[in-house]
Image: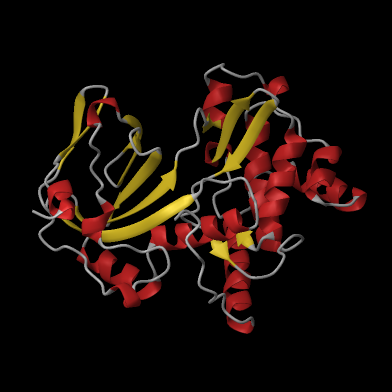
Length: 296
């Protein structure tokens, strides 16, 4: 029996000794000729979403539509999304899969040296347990946890984290041409190192990718507002020096702090920004460069 088939016969993923997923061999394996696959894509049968060392898997998230767990034997994290129905699958096929967009955004950032979760590959297929689903595998960041949970659970104090490195990280992300789309502290990972705390950005399922520097644009402003509003809710005090670390000048920083007092951007403004990003895609040459695999 081929190795890929043997891998698909492993049916259980466990976390803390509890059964989390029991899926049979996918009835419709997604296969595509190697020369027709898109960047980062592999066949469902090659993805092996079930771990050998399942008794020690670390579960990060489990909901009806998404499941995220660490594969300790591989040093990777697997994110598996359930598509709502066959119509959602058709829509993804026409417009692009969520994990495909996330893989492209992470690949572009990793190539530019931006601290992020490094993508390995993405896939989609059909499981008799989950139905149509799609998945993304990334390299695990040892000891990294979400910024908001570190604060709310008392592992770190607000004073332990300096915001200027975080805003410099966001600046480098926007400079690389990536809008996050859901830039909250829950999507910022914190890793304690000997020389201090290192930050990473993750979860780019709502991202938009361009080939130009986006700092100073309204979509970048929305990213900054989303992050800053929630940081203030966690107890952080946003200072002008933090915004200057992002790249805003003194007057722009003062205007941003004044805008920050009004809270999250309203729906009308968000729709206007969505329209601007659509217009940017139409008037500029699409980003069609094939991203090389970051991890061979």
